[in-house]
Length: 252
Image (cartoon, rainbow, N blue to C red; front, side, top):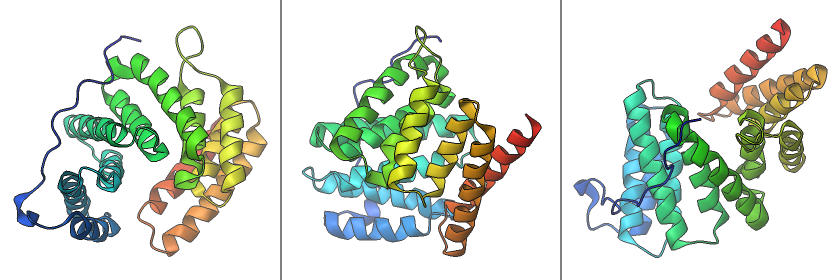
C-alpha cells in the first residue's frame, strides 16, 4: 500500500447555504431531518447535508448537525458514480468527523462516523488506505467500548468488514477470525438488521463456512425486502448486495 495521510487539519466549518441563515440550530435540524427522510431523491440528500452543516455552524456546542451531515454524505458517496465527486464528499465527511471529535471527544457516534468516512475516502484515494486502516480500527474499538449499539451495532459490523478486507500483518490489520467475532457480535445484538446479516455472511464465507454464509445472506435478503416494503431508502441496496453475495457464493 502506498502511504499518504488520511487526516489533515480540517478547514473551517462551512456555514451552508444562505437561504436558512438566521434560523436556530433546532429549526435547521428539523428541516434537515425532513430532507433526509426523502434522501432517495439526490437533491434532497444534498439539501439534507447542507442543512445539517448549517445547523452545526449555528450551535458550536452540539454534534447532531455534524453527525447528520456525515450520515447524508455517506449515503451520497455510496450512490455517486463520479469518482471526483465521491472524493470531494469523502474529504468533507472526514473533516466533519474531525470537528465532531473535537467537540465531543468521548462520543461514540463521532468515532464511528469518522471511521466510516475514512474508509470511504480510502476506497477512491487508495494512497490514504494504509494510514486509514489503523485509524479506523482504533476509532471503531473506541466506539465499541463507549456504545456498541449505535446504528444497529454499526461499530462491530464495520470493524468486521475492515478486518475481513484489510491485508494481514505486517501490511495491515486483516484478521478473518477477528472479523467473524465482530460480525457475530453485531448480529447477536441486532439479528434483524439486514446489514448485520450481510456482514455475517461475508465473514462466514471468509472463514470457509459457505453454507452458513448462504443462510445469513438469505436472511439478509428477506429482511431487506421487509424494510423495502416499509419504505426504507437503504433497503434496495441491501437486497441487491445480498443477491450479489449469494450469486458469488454459488459460483465459488
